[in-house]
Image (cartoon, rainbow, N blue to C red; front, side, top):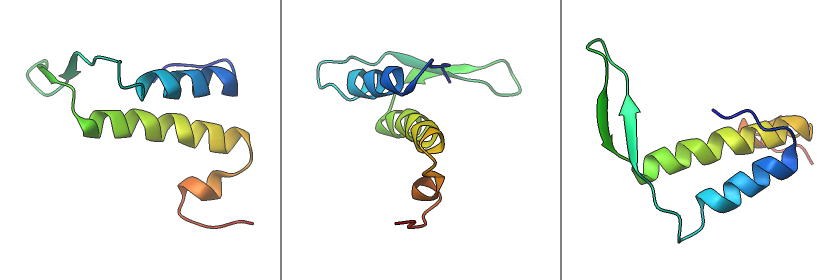
Length: 72
């Protein structure tokens, strides 16, 4: 995961990742034999989104959102 300096950078990353014009390349998965390269999938995008959203929630004191709770 990238290290973002602030919430603005995280939101900019989410915006770029989810822009319909963004093209995704290959993803490298590491295994016992060194690694395999494959095309990126929607699941990869969801994982990236989840990591950034969890970081934003944590910084805003709203981690319960990502943990499935509802703190209102």
